Amino acid sequence: AQSVAQPEDQVNVAEGNPLTVKCTYSVSGNPYLFWYVQYPNRGLQFLLKYITGDNLVKGSYGFEAEFNKSQTSFHLKKPSALVSDSALYFCAVRDMGGGSYIPTFGRGTSLIVHP
Amino acid sequence: DAGVIQSPRHEVTEMGQEVTLRCKPISGHNSLFWYRQTMMRGLELLIYFNNNVPIDDSGMPEDRFSAKMPNASFSTLKIQPSEPRDSAVYFCASSLTGDREYFGPGTRLTVT
Image 1 (cartoon, rainbow over the protein chains, first blue to last red):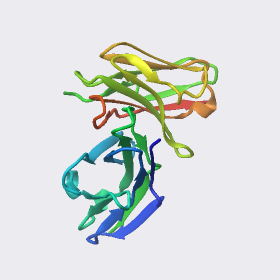
Image 2: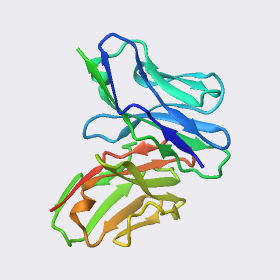
Image 3: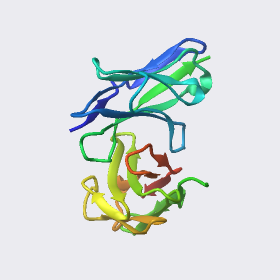
Protein backbone atom coordinates (compact mmCIF):
# COMPACT_ATOMS: atom_id res chain seq x y z
CA ALA A 1 0.00 0.00 0.00
CA GLN A 2 1.10 3.56 -0.58
CA SER A 3 0.09 6.75 1.16
CA VAL A 4 1.11 10.36 1.42
CA ALA A 5 0.47 12.95 4.11
CA GLN A 6 0.57 16.71 3.96
CA PRO A 7 0.33 17.64 7.63
CA GLU A 8 -0.46 21.31 7.09
CA ASP A 9 -3.70 22.49 5.54
CA GLN A 10 -2.27 25.98 5.19
CA VAL A 11 1.13 27.61 5.24
CA ASN A 12 1.57 31.34 5.64
CA VAL A 13 4.80 33.09 4.75
CA ALA A 14 5.89 36.64 4.08
CA GLU A 15 7.11 37.59 0.63
CA GLY A 16 10.86 37.25 0.38
CA ASN A 17 11.06 34.67 3.15
CA PRO A 18 11.90 31.01 2.54
CA LEU A 19 9.01 28.60 2.35
CA THR A 20 8.59 24.92 3.09
CA VAL A 21 5.57 22.76 2.34
CA LYS A 22 5.80 19.40 4.05
CA CYS A 23 5.11 15.94 2.65
CA THR A 24 5.70 12.50 4.10
CA TYR A 25 5.04 9.23 2.34
CA SER A 26 4.75 5.51 2.86
CA VAL A 27 5.49 2.84 0.26
CA SER A 28 6.56 -0.78 0.27
CA GLY A 29 9.24 -0.38 -2.36
CA ASN A 30 11.06 2.61 -3.74
CA PRO A 31 9.09 5.84 -4.06
CA TYR A 32 8.43 7.87 -7.15
CA LEU A 33 7.53 11.32 -5.78
CA PHE A 34 5.88 14.35 -7.36
CA TRP A 35 4.84 17.88 -6.52
CA TYR A 36 2.04 19.67 -8.33
CA VAL A 37 0.63 23.18 -7.98
CA GLN A 38 -2.94 24.31 -8.58
CA TYR A 39 -3.83 27.93 -9.14
CA PRO A 40 -7.45 29.04 -8.72
CA ASN A 41 -9.78 27.67 -11.37
CA ARG A 42 -6.98 25.74 -13.06
CA GLY A 43 -5.88 22.15 -13.32
CA LEU A 44 -2.88 20.78 -11.47
CA GLN A 45 0.49 21.67 -12.94
CA PHE A 46 3.62 19.58 -12.52
CA LEU A 47 6.46 21.17 -10.53
CA LEU A 48 9.06 18.45 -10.05
CA LYS A 49 9.65 14.76 -9.47
CA TYR A 50 12.10 12.42 -7.80
CA ILE A 51 12.96 8.95 -9.04
CA THR A 52 16.58 8.30 -8.14
CA GLY A 53 19.80 10.24 -7.89
CA ASP A 54 20.44 13.49 -6.09
CA ASN A 55 18.25 13.99 -3.07
CA LEU A 56 17.74 17.64 -3.96
CA VAL A 57 15.51 18.02 -6.98
CA LYS A 58 15.04 21.33 -8.76
CA GLY A 59 11.82 22.16 -10.54
CA SER A 60 9.78 24.91 -12.10
CA TYR A 61 9.40 28.48 -10.81
CA GLY A 62 12.43 28.22 -8.51
CA PHE A 63 11.01 25.41 -6.41
CA GLU A 64 13.05 22.50 -5.15
CA ALA A 65 12.36 19.47 -3.02
CA GLU A 66 14.54 17.38 -0.79
CA PHE A 67 14.13 13.63 -0.66
CA ASN A 68 14.92 12.17 2.75
CA LYS A 69 14.69 8.39 2.79
CA SER A 70 15.24 7.95 6.52
CA GLN A 71 12.46 10.39 7.36
CA THR A 72 10.32 9.30 4.38
CA SER A 73 9.83 12.94 3.50
CA PHE A 74 9.82 15.02 0.35
CA HIS A 75 9.40 18.62 1.45
CA LEU A 76 8.92 21.37 -1.11
CA LYS A 77 11.06 24.46 -0.66
CA LYS A 78 11.78 27.83 -2.17
CA PRO A 79 14.45 30.25 -0.92
CA SER A 80 12.41 33.40 -1.44
CA ALA A 81 8.61 33.34 -1.69
CA LEU A 82 6.61 35.46 -4.11
CA VAL A 83 3.01 36.58 -3.71
CA SER A 84 2.36 34.82 -7.01
CA ASP A 85 3.37 31.51 -5.40
CA SER A 86 0.11 31.58 -3.45
CA ALA A 87 -1.71 28.44 -4.56
CA LEU A 88 -2.67 24.90 -3.57
CA TYR A 89 0.20 22.41 -3.54
CA PHE A 90 -0.14 18.66 -3.85
CA CYS A 91 2.39 15.96 -3.10
CA ALA A 92 1.96 12.56 -4.77
CA VAL A 93 3.69 9.21 -4.47
CA ARG A 94 3.80 6.03 -6.48
CA ASP A 95 5.36 2.80 -5.30
CA MET A 96 7.78 1.74 -8.00
CA GLY A 97 7.76 -1.81 -6.73
CA GLY A 98 4.06 -2.07 -6.18
CA GLY A 99 3.03 -2.93 -9.69
CA SER A 100 0.49 -0.13 -9.79
CA TYR A 101 0.85 2.91 -12.00
CA ILE A 102 -1.64 4.92 -10.00
CA PRO A 103 -0.18 7.69 -7.82
CA THR A 104 -1.66 8.63 -4.48
CA PHE A 105 -2.17 12.35 -3.90
CA GLY A 106 -2.12 14.19 -0.62
CA ARG A 107 -4.98 16.43 0.45
CA GLY A 108 -3.11 19.53 -0.56
CA THR A 109 -1.59 22.47 1.30
CA SER A 110 -2.74 26.01 0.70
CA LEU A 111 0.25 28.34 0.52
CA ILE A 112 -0.46 31.99 1.23
CA VAL A 113 2.34 34.47 0.64
CA HIS A 114 1.71 37.84 2.24
CA PRO A 115 3.09 41.03 0.66
CA ASP B 1 0.67 20.07 -28.24
CA ALA B 2 -2.52 21.63 -26.93
CA GLY B 3 -2.40 19.65 -23.71
CA VAL B 4 -5.29 17.71 -22.27
CA ILE B 5 -8.57 19.07 -23.55
CA GLN B 6 -11.78 18.86 -21.58
CA SER B 7 -15.29 19.88 -22.51
CA PRO B 8 -17.46 21.49 -21.49
CA ARG B 9 -15.59 23.79 -19.11
CA HIS B 10 -18.76 24.53 -17.19
CA GLU B 11 -21.96 22.55 -16.94
CA VAL B 12 -25.10 23.46 -15.06
CA THR B 13 -27.86 20.91 -15.03
CA GLU B 14 -30.90 19.91 -13.07
CA MET B 15 -31.08 16.94 -10.79
CA GLY B 16 -32.00 13.80 -12.67
CA GLN B 17 -30.48 14.85 -15.97
CA GLU B 18 -27.71 12.98 -17.74
CA VAL B 19 -24.32 14.65 -17.85
CA THR B 20 -21.45 13.71 -20.16
CA LEU B 21 -17.96 15.05 -19.66
CA ARG B 22 -15.38 14.68 -22.40
CA CYS B 23 -11.63 14.41 -22.48
CA LYS B 24 -8.99 14.33 -25.18
CA PRO B 25 -5.64 13.19 -23.78
CA ILE B 26 -2.26 14.22 -25.08
CA SER B 27 -1.34 12.33 -28.22
CA GLY B 28 0.92 9.38 -27.47
CA HIS B 29 -0.05 9.07 -23.82
CA ASN B 30 -1.28 5.63 -22.85
CA SER B 31 -2.68 6.33 -19.38
CA LEU B 32 -5.78 8.35 -18.59
CA PHE B 33 -7.23 9.33 -15.23
CA TRP B 34 -10.52 10.90 -14.18
CA TYR B 35 -10.52 12.81 -10.87
CA ARG B 36 -13.13 14.70 -8.91
CA GLN B 37 -12.25 17.64 -6.66
CA THR B 38 -14.42 19.09 -3.91
CA MET B 39 -13.66 21.19 -0.88
CA MET B 40 -14.87 18.47 1.43
CA ARG B 41 -13.17 15.44 -0.07
CA GLY B 42 -10.21 16.96 -1.90
CA LEU B 43 -8.92 15.26 -5.05
CA GLU B 44 -10.38 11.79 -5.62
CA LEU B 45 -9.37 9.33 -8.32
CA LEU B 46 -12.47 7.99 -10.04
CA ILE B 47 -11.05 5.71 -12.72
CA TYR B 48 -7.77 4.83 -14.43
CA PHE B 49 -7.38 3.58 -18.00
CA ASN B 50 -4.24 2.10 -19.49
CA ASN B 51 -4.11 1.50 -23.24
CA ASN B 52 -7.84 2.27 -23.37
CA VAL B 53 -8.69 -0.46 -20.86
CA PRO B 54 -10.18 0.39 -17.46
CA ILE B 55 -7.69 -0.84 -14.89
CA ASP B 56 -9.03 0.55 -11.65
CA ASP B 57 -12.56 1.91 -11.22
CA SER B 58 -12.75 1.46 -7.48
CA GLY B 59 -13.15 5.19 -7.03
CA MET B 60 -16.33 5.42 -9.08
CA PRO B 61 -18.93 6.49 -6.52
CA GLU B 62 -21.83 4.34 -7.65
CA ASP B 63 -23.63 2.89 -10.62
CA ARG B 64 -24.77 6.31 -11.71
CA PHE B 65 -21.21 6.96 -12.88
CA SER B 66 -19.71 5.33 -15.95
CA ALA B 67 -16.62 5.99 -18.02
CA LYS B 68 -15.50 4.85 -21.44
CA MET B 69 -12.42 5.15 -23.56
CA PRO B 70 -13.34 3.95 -27.06
CA ASN B 71 -9.97 4.92 -28.50
CA ALA B 72 -6.65 6.43 -27.49
CA SER B 73 -7.76 9.98 -28.17
CA PHE B 74 -11.10 10.21 -26.41
CA SER B 75 -12.75 9.42 -23.10
CA THR B 76 -16.10 10.22 -21.52
CA LEU B 77 -17.39 10.30 -17.98
CA LYS B 78 -21.14 10.02 -17.72
CA ILE B 79 -23.40 10.63 -14.75
CA GLN B 80 -26.97 9.38 -15.05
CA PRO B 81 -29.03 10.49 -13.23
CA SER B 82 -27.16 13.44 -11.76
CA GLU B 83 -27.64 14.58 -8.16
CA PRO B 84 -26.70 17.81 -6.36
CA ARG B 85 -23.95 15.99 -4.45
CA ASP B 86 -22.21 15.34 -7.77
CA SER B 87 -21.40 19.04 -8.01
CA ALA B 88 -17.62 19.28 -8.22
CA VAL B 89 -14.76 20.00 -10.58
CA TYR B 90 -13.91 16.98 -12.69
CA PHE B 91 -10.39 16.65 -14.04
CA CYS B 92 -9.00 14.43 -16.72
CA ALA B 93 -5.27 13.72 -16.77
CA SER B 94 -3.04 11.74 -19.09
CA SER B 95 0.47 10.37 -18.88
CA LEU B 96 2.92 7.88 -20.20
CA THR B 97 2.48 4.87 -17.96
CA GLY B 98 3.81 5.61 -14.50
CA ASP B 99 5.20 9.04 -15.27
CA ARG B 100 3.99 12.50 -14.29
CA GLU B 101 0.45 13.43 -15.16
CA TYR B 102 -0.73 16.24 -17.38
CA PHE B 103 -4.00 17.65 -16.12
CA GLY B 104 -6.75 19.23 -18.15
CA PRO B 105 -8.37 22.51 -17.12
CA GLY B 106 -11.32 20.72 -15.56
CA THR B 107 -15.09 20.78 -15.93
CA ARG B 108 -17.01 22.59 -13.22
CA LEU B 109 -20.29 20.72 -12.76
CA THR B 110 -23.20 22.23 -10.88
CA VAL B 111 -26.29 20.12 -10.33
CA THR B 112 -29.29 22.05 -9.05
